[in-house]
Amino acid sequence: MTASDQSNQALSEIIESHTKDRGSLIPLLQETQAKLGYISRDAMQAISDFLEIPRVEVWGVATFYNQFRLTPLGKHHTVVCMGTACHLAGGKLILEALERELDIKAGETSEDGNFSLERVACIGCCMLAPVAMIGDRIFPRMTPFKAEEALIPYKQGDDKDAEH
Image (cartoon, rainbow, N blue to C red; front, top):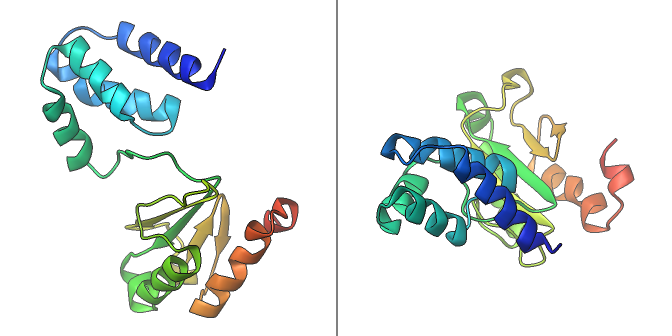
């Protein structure tokens, strides 16, 4: 079974567990993202068909709430905290350094699928500001130089060193 077939099967199971009710739209989007990692155009079309509402309405809801992703995350999902403490401590400089180094903007995934970059409101590590995360690893007291340095093991494919 191909990855596409698995995705379609998972999406069918999600849809079948709901009623044809407009109120099911957000739960359908949430479950789709939880199961597939993001909400594809095909998934939006399937949800639109199931609920018998225009696809543009599904698109509108999916793009209105920033909890939803319309592209898959990269292998190394990178997050920069932009909460008050991190912002004041230079979070914007960290984000800009990562955008330059990864050659993507916040909200994008690299062409090779290795990296995705996201800005978030708060990671919850205010005492360590500014903070970034790559995967599950927290990088405290970041500087633009440290941000570039933190990517090295991930870019070299040495994930074992990167995780510690």
